[in-house]
Amino acid sequence: MKYSAKVVSSVLFVSQLERSVNFYCDVFGCEQAIREEGAALLLDPGGFQVYLIAQGSGAAHYPTGVGPHLLMWATDTMEGLEHFEQVLKDRTDHTYKHSTGGVTFVEARDPDGIRVVIAYPDPEQMPRSVLDLRLYL
Image 1 (cartoon, rainbow, N blue to C red):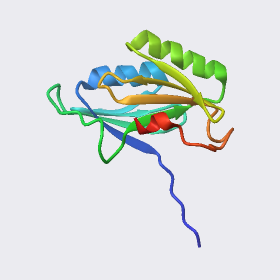
Image 2 (cartoon, rainbow, N blue to C red):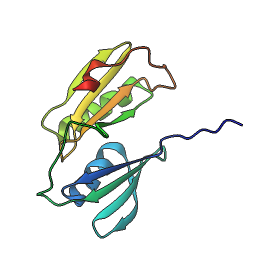
Image 3 (tube, one colour):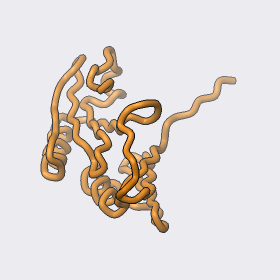
Image 4 (cartoon, rainbow, N blue to C red):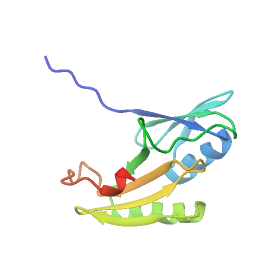
């Protein structure tokens, strides 16, 4: 018998919980499922779970090294990608849009500087044939 598993959650350490909850709910349409002292569980419209755990404003941020590097989302229409690009432009200082291997990416950063990338088309619509070099940055 062959067993399988899939990624269903991400855990992010954040400096200000409320600010991060607002960002992910406003940008990605997440709903807050659980809220406790210093932590929240958000569900995106597809059911993916984003755990936010407050570390305080003085916590160190490690953008390189071993471990999760960024959050990547996907949308199934170009209009959806344009919507997210505009929402991110309205909320962040910098967004970047580029294409590789037939896939268009919009990139920004959440309130703590964590890279957020949205891709179109999603991998179910078009399996990836190349790795985007910006993922290594």
